[in-house]
Image 1 (tube, rainbow, N blue to C red):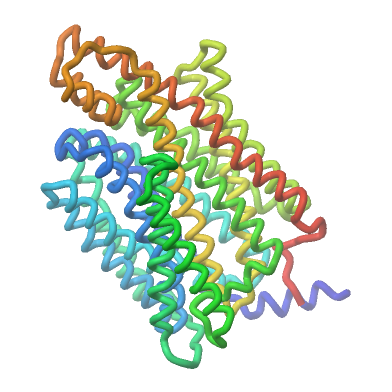
Image 2 (cartoon, helix red, strand yellow; image 1 turned 180 degrees about the horizontal axis):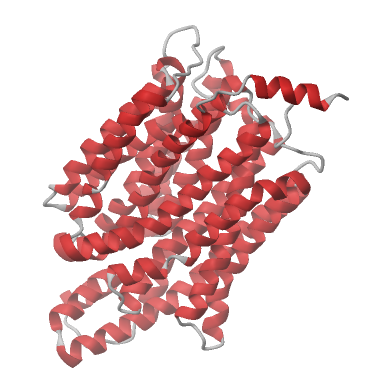
Length: 515
C-alpha cells in the first residue's frame, strides 16, 4: 500500500474555493433551520392572531416538510440536468417570494399556501447544497468535516432561530419570523452568484414526466395518509384511501425507475446495506426528534407560561448539544468503527426522549430536568445524524449524488413531519383523555378538546381566577399526554440502533478515500 502518494494526488485536485463554498452553503442551511424553529416559537402568536383550527394548525406546521419531501426527487434530478448552482439560487428566489406572501397573510389558508411554496423552494435548495459539497470536497476526510460543519450549522440555526425569533415576535408580531428570510435569501443569492461553482451530471434522454407525477403523488399521498391516520384513527377511510394511493403510485414509480436507463432516482442505491441503514437511522430519528421539539415548545408556552423568547432560550440545550457533538464526531469516525458511533448516538437519543417520562414518574419534571433531557437528546442527534449523513453520501457513486442527497433530505423532512403528525396526534389523544370535567358549555368544551392552543386562547379570554384555573387543568392534561408520547418516540431510535449494530459492516470507513 502507498497511502501518501494517493493522498497527495487527491489533495492536488482540491478546489481552492471549497471553504468559501462551505460557508455559503452553510448559510443556506442556516436559513432553513432558523425558519423551522422560528415558526415553532412564533406559532402561539400566529394561532392567537389568525385562530386556525386544529387541522389548519397541523397543516401550517407540516405542509412545508410535506411539499419539500414531495418535490425533492424531482428537484435533485433537475439540478443534475440544469446545474446545481442554478437550482440553489432559484430555490432561494422562491423562498424569498414565499416569505413575503406569508408576511402579508391575513387568513390561515394563506399561511399554509406560503409554507407550501417555502417547501418547494427548500426542495430546490437542499439537494443542491449536499451535491455541491460532494463536488468540491474530493478528499474523504475533509468531506466528512464539511458534512459535520453542515450538520453543526443546522444545530446553530435551531439555536439561533428561537432566540432571534422570540425577540422579533415579541416586538413585531409573528410576521417578522417570515420577513427575516428575505434579506438572508438575497445575501446568499448575491454571494452564490459570485463564488459557487456550477456542477451538473447531464443525462441523455427525455425528461421523465411520468416519473415526476408518480413520485409527487406518491409522497404527498403517503404523508397525507399517515397524517390523517394519526388525526382520525385507524377507522378513518380517508387515511386508508390515501395510503392505498401512495402504495400504488410509489410501487409504479419504483418499478419504472428500475426499468429506465436514466431514471429520476436510482432506486438501486438502497441495495447498499450501509446506505439503507443510514437512511433508516435518519428517518426514524427525525420522527422522534420532530415530535419532541414540537411538543416541548408547546409545553414551554402553554404548560409553563413562558413567552416566545423565554421558550426559545430554554430550547437551547438541544441545538447546542447538537453543534458540539457534530463537530467532534469526525474525529471519532477516524478512530472508532462507524456502527459503534452511530449506534451510540442513537442510544443517546433514546435516553433523551425517555428521561422526561422518568422524571415525571419521580415527581421532578421541571425545567432543570427537561433541560438535561434536551441536552442528551441534542448530543445524540448531533452524533447520529453526522455519522449517518457521511455514511449515506459516501455510499453513493458520484454520478448519483443528487439522488442520494434527495433521499437524505426526504428522510430528514418527511421524518420530522410524520413525527408531528403521528406522535403529535397521539399526544393530542392522550391530552383529551386526561382532561377532567371542566363545567363549560358545549362550544367551549369543544374548543378545549380541540387543542391545547385553543384551550389557552379560551383561558386568556376568560381571564381572572376562572381563566387561570382552566389553564392549569389543561396544562396538567397536556403534560400527562406529552411524556408518554416521548417514551413511545424513544422506541424509534432504539430500533435504529439495533439495526445499526446488526447490519452495518464492521470494517466500514466512509472517511477514507477509496482508490
